[in-house]
Image 1 (cartoon, rainbow, N blue to C red):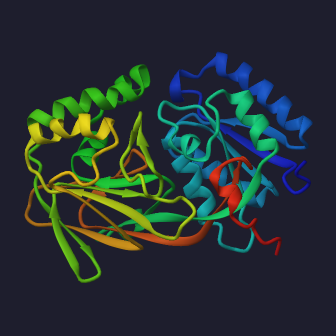
Image 2 (tube, rainbow, N blue to C red):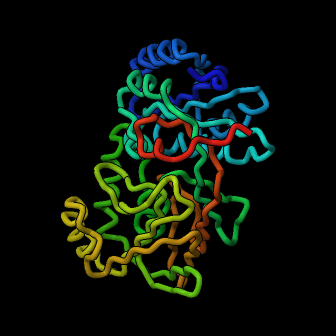
Length: 322
């Protein structure tokens, strides 16, 4: 039972993962399970981009004790950005009911994709404090966004910027694969500079990981730790689209680390800078951010997260009740 989490807001994106009426019935069952565990969750549905952020921002002033996200990684990112700015002493914890196509966080913390089963796990979960990543466009700092899972720059940023939103709504994660295949043959893979302290590296792709999981079946930053105050970063130096394709079997087999042209390191902040006029785009949690230059940095204790007690985080000390 969670006596401090009774008044919850469930934010649902009905367009994520082909939800609709079928998912609403499943959510009713999940709300029943939560209620039996002492969590009363009022349902609100988003109707457009940015609405989940506004709903999450209002949660604190409305006296909510928990915000539950049901949607894809983009919806989750919006909600995280609504909650993380509440730095007035009252931070509303976040929970997740997986409803998207990738569900990176669900994989990371061991939540089942079955929504009622996930609700049952949350009823018996614990609230923990974690760091977030913050991505700040250097020339447009007002557009800074927090991210929970993975950010990056290079071809993945271009894929996110170029993807057909209607195709994404119909095909889910397959739309990213389709767009990725197109970019292999038309993207020029320009180099940009990654700066970590005094170290500099020219790369065509950088992945900034808070989680081991990247998207789909892939684990790229597989030594990242959601509960540590640092990123794991992966950079690729090749500028060949065909070389990118050659990495896929290696990535699928979990043997990317140690491959020629692949670099891994850990840091609390990095800056990605363009080398010329070629546009290089950044993304956060699968959502477009801005053109480089962009700074990525760790913000400790930025979010409270409700997780299953049998996830790896259960080994960590529980949050302070102060």
